[in-house]
Length: 74
Image 1 (cartoon, rainbow, N blue to C red):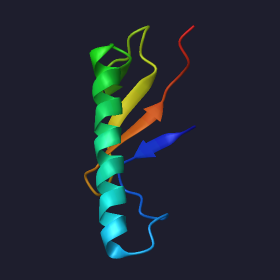
Image 2: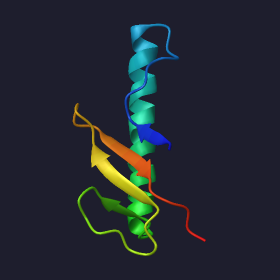
Image 3: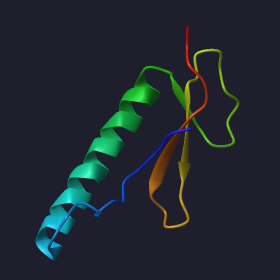
Image 4: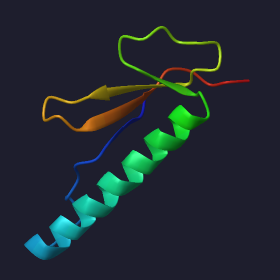
């Protein structure tokens, strides 16, 4: 299972790079989630999955959006 989250600064070496890296990852995650939702391939946690649902969107303990793969669509 792969979980995508918008809070990683493991690769950054200084605070400025950490902030830029975290911001870029947050934007990428939000775009990915928006695209999944627009195509009908994701539902929010607690919603009933459709036959096309491949991902579930939730919120982590820190309030950030997370994406969990539910299944592969054939």
